[in-house]
Image 1: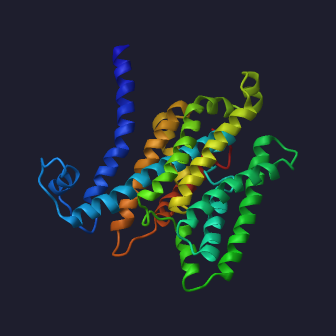
Image 2: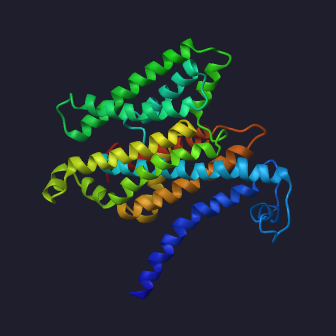
Image 3: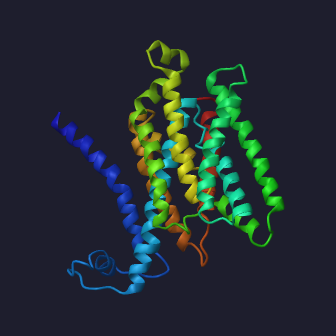
Length: 338
C-alpha cells in the first residue's frame, strides 16, 4: 500500500516537473548562445551568489525566452485538455478543440481587429470575444435540429465554423494586401513570437477553464458511456456538459487569442496520453495537460531554431498532426468512440 502511494506521488511529481524542465531547456537554446553559468547568474543576480550578467543576456532570458515558454506551456495545456474533454463528451476520437467553431470565431475576431482597428491588443480582445460568441451560436443553432444533443452541437459547430470562415474570407478580400493581409495570414499560422508579460492576463480564463475540466474529469468517463447510461447513473448530463464544454471553450478561446490558430494539439496529444494511461479521464486529463505543455514549448523552441527565420508553430504542428490523423483514421476505420 505504501509502495502504491509512493508510485502515485511519483507520477504526479513527474507530470508537474516535465513542463518545468521543458521551459528550463528552452532558456539555453536559441540563436543567441547562453551558457548554463550565465543563466544561473541572470536568475540569481540580485543575490550576488553567482555574480553579475550582461544586459543582453538578461533581455534575452527575461523578456524573450521565458515569457513565450511559459505562455507556450499554458496554451499547450489548454488546447490539449480541451481536446481530451471534447473527445470524451462527444464520444469521438477524431474531435478536436475547435469542433464548436472556437478557432474560426477567434480568427474572424482577430482579422476584424487587424482590418478596422489596426491590430495590436485589439486582436486579443476581439479573438477571445468572438471565440466565445462562436460557441454560443453553435449551441443555439444546434438546437434547431431534432437529433441527439451531442449531434446537434457538432452540427451547430460545423455551421458556425463555415459562417465565420466565410466572414474571414471577406475581410481578407478587402484587407490591404501589403500590410493587413500578411498580418491576418500570419495570425492564422500561429506564433508565440509577440508574447510578453502583458499577455499573461489570458492565463486567468485559461486556468479557470482547465480547472472546470479537471474538477469534472470523472464525469467525462460517465458521459462517454452515452446519454442514457449517464442518466441511469444519476448524472445531470445537461449541467456537466455545459460545465465541461464551457471550460474547454474558455481555455481554448483564451489560448487562441494570444497564440493564433495552432492546430492538431487538441487531437494528437490526448491520443498520445491514451497510449500511456488508457481511456480513464481521471488520469488522461492531467497527463494531457502535462504533455500538451511540454509539446508546445518544445515546438516553439524548434520553430525559433530550425531555420534562419522563425517558422510559425502552426506549420510544425500540422506537419506532425497530419500523418497522425491518417494513422487514427486507419486505427478507428471510420468508427466512433473506442
